[in-house]
Length: 156
Image (cartoon, rainbow, N blue to C red; front, side, top):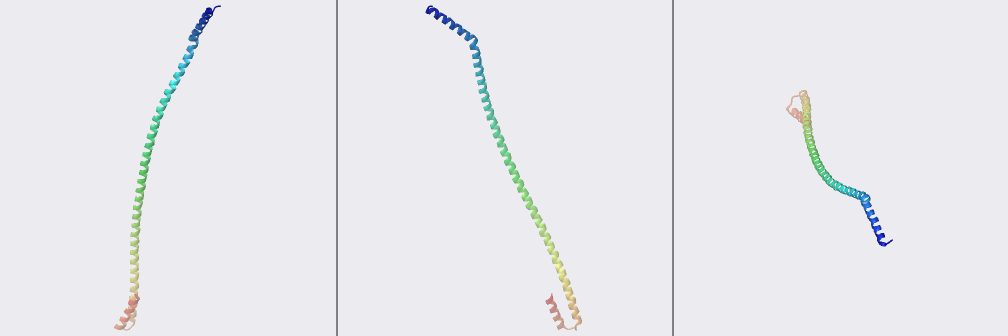
């Protein structure tokens, strides 16, 4: 055999191998590569979409946190105002109650003063009657009367 025939036979076999590879081997490989490229592209698109959604979710979370902080601050301020109002109301009630107690004490003191005056008047009247009795038992004399009245004054 000559080199040309061998060379020609090798070219024919190589051509048949290339045709077989292009017809039966290459399309499934190309299809698998295309599918893999599509999956990668879909995955990258999904990752970008998820990244955008994450950014939006973070924004919403920050907005909700800011809203919650503002609401909490306003509720705290309301609670402080209510507490201050309750304290002021309690102070007012305590002052009013104190004034009532003072007024009642003054009235009671006045009543006790009146009772003491009445008791003193009764004692003075008793002493006056006693003094008059002693004066009437003794003789009627201006000097003796003056002396008895002086002792009566000292007793009062």
